[in-house]
Length: 498
Image 1 (cartoon, one colour):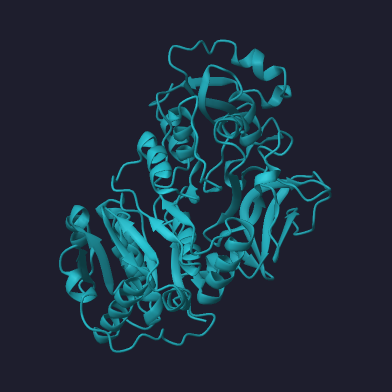
Image 2: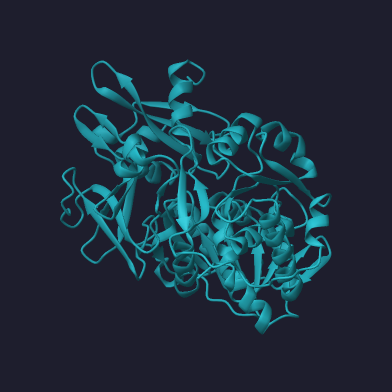
């Protein structure tokens, strides 16, 4: 089934329900559906469908959703990218996926045009794209597609190098959408969904699920994330569910008044980066049991494990929850054998959410998908009762004096110290130990961090305790909020951080 059929059904069943609201204007589902059909017909006319790539490089706004579903509808492939990318970063993605169309907005048009190839058609939302979306529609039916036809190329965040494009088929997105509605955030046409995170990432999958159930989707007017304004918006429009990254949850918690009340809010789905147990407990104390954590990757889009609202208990905070229904998750050793309970190994995933492969990278695909199992590169362990605990990225694991040190474990301990705001633990080459454990700390304002070693020693074995503490004002992150540890290692090696 073409993933655009979700929108078609919502428009048929609930044509006059509000679909997308932004800056005082609302599209109902009939108009949302009509505009995507117009976009799809235009793609066919210019030879950009089926099977061609459409890059979406713009801030959150209705045209992003229209172009996404319009490309699905035409049988083309969407390539949503973060609107903060530079010319070099965007040029790489446009050339790599051989994009036939690039949709942008006025704020990003210069970068978009500088990045476009000679065969790429650039359209600007709010300007010449309007001519496409207002044209009369002849055919409203989605293009027939094979289940394994690529609907979305999800470029990895590139925390360890150049991004790779994970090919996600219509079948994968269908499964992910149904799974999302079953496991993460059940919705119907009375729900109100808030899109406060980039629709190019996890929020985009949340948007597909909201569209499938004809929920009213709210896009904040402001481009920047203002936690106080978001709290007010949730109350003003009666938001029932949203997708957030952990940094946004922390910001909302810090901004919330002591008597905060969000009576309509039922589900806050979060993922994309780790959140410390301390930070999550503060959020629970502030907002109540509304949080649902997911774990997944672009290669198995946001679909591997889940920690439900009722699972956010002290003994499970810091875990990744349990495998989602329909998904197999294992912890395996270097030979691919399943590890015994609580024995560390690499986390592997199998199921209907796993990508077809990496775009134009057969060798990388063969290294990542083996016998139907996606090797995530994440190290973890699984308890006897099926709870998954992530330990580190395989490439970020520290080996000091022959012993494995998992950075996440050390970070969880250090963030419990009252002087620590944020921390990232990395390994630095050392002639004697192989690698030294180093903690890069963002301290609380004016806080004393002199007793961190003594604090860590109460919980951690000696070989896990950082040998150095480096204080800094902030941690480098990519566009999706993940800490760039390779940048930290480089900065320490170059003497930029001491």
